[in-house]
Length: 68
Image (cartoon, rainbow, N blue to C red; front, side):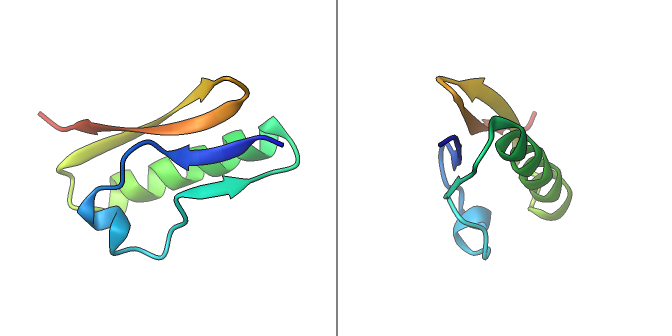
């Protein structure tokens, strides 16, 4: 089963109610959830980091990058 996993938990993520790993029935469901999480985090977290989802080995990984 495909999963969505955050690559590295920043402080904002640790203080949120979001789960670091979630499992799904299909890759399409995982892709949709990963994109939703990235949008939420990019819009609501402190903007120190930028989040993007990538497909790796049949799963969705949320990459964490420094802004600017």
